[in-house]
Length: 146
Image 1 (tube, rainbow, N blue to C red):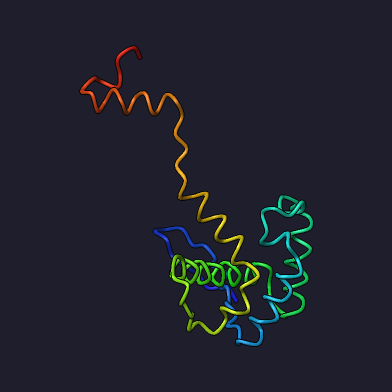
Image 2 (image 1 turned 90 degrees about the vertical axis):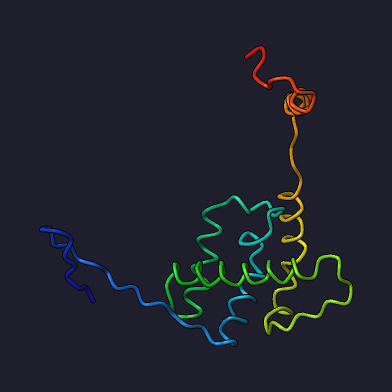
C-alpha cells in the first residue's frame, strides 16, 4: 500500500514496509537454518564472502518462514546483536547463566562472536604509531619531520 507524502511542493510515494513479528518457534526455525548455513555467520567458512551462497541461504530462510529477505536479515541482525550482548555479559564469568530464552539456540555462534570481539579489542599499533606516541610522551611534537 502506498501513501502520498508531501515534501514541500513535491509529492512522492512512500512504500509501506510491513515488519514481521516472529514467534519464538519461528526464531528457532530461523536459527536452525542459519546454523546449517555457516556462510551466514562463520567468518572462517570458505563461503563467508560468497554473496551468491549467502543470498541462497537467506532466500531459504525467507521462503521457509514466508517473509522477505530484508525481514530475515533484520531479524538475524537483531538476534545476533542480542547474542553479542549476552556473550559480553558472560565474558570472564564462569558462573554466568543467561536468562534470554534464545541463548541456548544461539550457542553455535558464541565462538565466532568471541573471535569478533577479541579482534575488535586488539589495537593494531604500527612502529610509526609507537614512535609518534613515544615522541609525544617525551614532549616532542608528533609532527616534526612531516
